[in-house]
Image 1: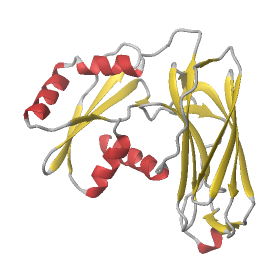
Image 2: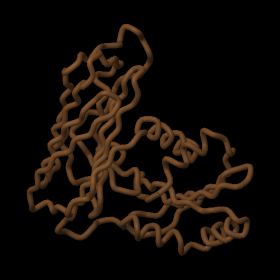
Image 3: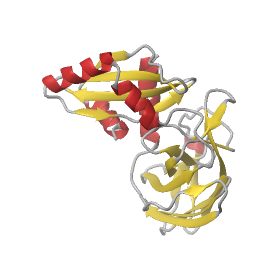
Length: 267
């Protein structure tokens, strides 16, 4: 199961590379209303987004070709324009009204289309203040800073990525452990303490990875890079009780692919 986790996280890294950041704003509760704009330019595309935050977060966005040439992209699974919103320091995403992609992305030259100069691709996504778990299950979102991410994959001219932070607060108490509480529970575990001491004794720097939730557990993860291999520890923490599940430790090859993925996951 843990190997599957690794490859899922690596897939997310490939999808979301690049950089475009805006400064923090004041926390917005579900009882208030706020509207803000966000723009970013990269790889010949200009993003304009209007963000309305209240009980829901509504994002109306457009990508415009600001070059004098066509921008080519693969339209097999519709426009590869993605908008997501996740809790900072984690891979836990807010639920949105977008349908899951039921399309296999394979390359076919017939699927390549052109975005002419001045043309725009528009998209509107509505996020609820809930974390989407497996199936239809959801849980109330936590207070904190959320990364609103925009990405678009072109064919041959690069990958567009931009992110802006949004601070959310809620009037009700959290129904699950916060990430900070789950991390504290993990660090108090004797097996984790021993792993941590071993890495420090070997002179390895320990780095924290993005956490995520599956079913009833937070997964809190750390890694340490040695001379020839990477040492990881994955700690499941029950989101309600804080009970520690079966801890998994693994050793990965220290190759470029592993190091690149780990860099994307490190906090």
